[in-house]
Image 1: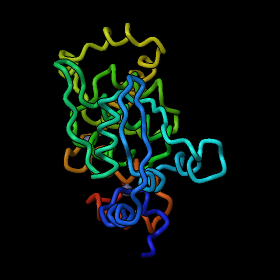
Image 2 (image 1 turned 90 degrees about the vertical axis):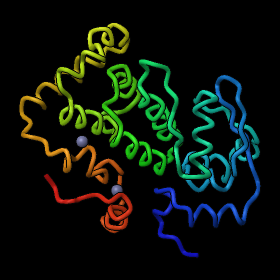
Image 3 (image 1 turned 180 degrees about the horizontal axis):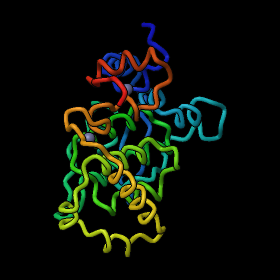
Length: 238
Ligand SMILES: [Zn+2]
Ligand SMILES: [Zn+2]
């Protein structure tokens, strides 16, 4: 089967089943708190440019069978489930903790390991989740470069959907005290400028929730066309 070159950029059952049918070899991934999982090697190599380089070239790593990953055991299991099923199970967050934090940790991992399909999936979840709490915003800003689509998405979501009432449940000043990298004040400044300039937001058409292709890092217009059908983007520009 000839797949378009961008087929690994989005999780798709056709290509995944095709790989799983042909290849049974697994490798182990180990979380920083000691959980080990087996994943299909060919599948990992298909989605991750990082593991593709590490496992298929002539590096000393190519024969390694176990890799340490910067994820907790719980998040590693969510990653493994996503790799084989394309779905991220809804994270269980303790009361007061933001569900988005789990998605953000998976996104950061997907950036380190160069898995675009997982980054896109996370954007999809965040587009339909409530606004991430300030602690999660700080996590994003401290770990993502200026050009990161996730950074742009969280700022756009705040500009479009933030209201002062939301802050009664999520205390900005308390988060600032925990923000050791000092990233939140800059975000707040951009937010306030954005809110001051925002026109009325139509919740059925806002870019953050309905034009996800903007955050998908597409390689070509051909791919956008293919993808906007998949993601049901309504796509004229603002
Ligand atoms: Zn929105
Ligand atoms: Zn897209």
